[in-house]
Length: 304
Image (cartoon, one colour):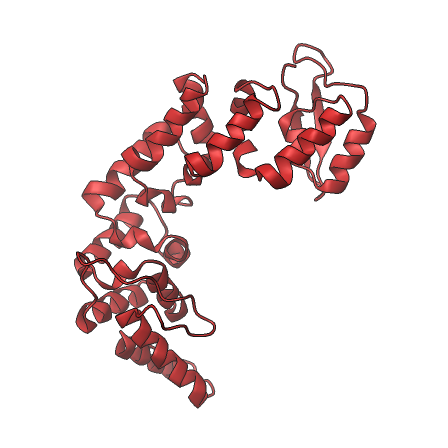
């Protein structure tokens, strides 16, 4: 892989003359190339992510020829050398899988998932594991599931395709159903807010849901209206703002309570002391909220 990167760098210099790299930087690049191939745990290079843990015994360490083949394919696909090093650090298997697996994944992303060729570097920068995921067993079933669910703009959310339907996607939907939401409502939440698939259940979704249903005394229906609730930090955002509202006897809709910055939230709370949002059936329930960025967002108050 080191030789491939050096040849690629030489070709780039030939096309666009640049000052030659300093000797210390050239040495550092050689050290990083060796680190990506051998992956010792004790090696740390300033400016680059730490080397990953040693591969399990059942995972083969990359051979120079396999790593070089993978690097050639990715460089040809437009992945910058710096992103290639980062991807190898995030997903060491990238340098161990056959080149055919990588080319098949690239072809799938462009031909079936609709990812434009010029967007491949961005997609792979976010989720290099896409390239080591088998097309027939992982990428294609996940694509079909997300399409059936109705998730829009999958080309922009291609990093979801490396997730397992059985182990990652369905458990999030089933968790929402366990809160009392109908299956149709849970699937609608995932369709409207696909970021739900990134959140852990026990470390993120469950404690936030328990706080909403318990300490906040709210209903799961409010999650249907505002699935973005799970994107806010429980200790730093949700709990302090709920406690501030409760101390003043105010019950805000979740978007109004969580979306604005601190200054806007305090100003809104000061103007709501002793009042509650109108019922959904009231002609006053349809309101607008201007966030700190100056954008107008429509807010729909939940039934109290």
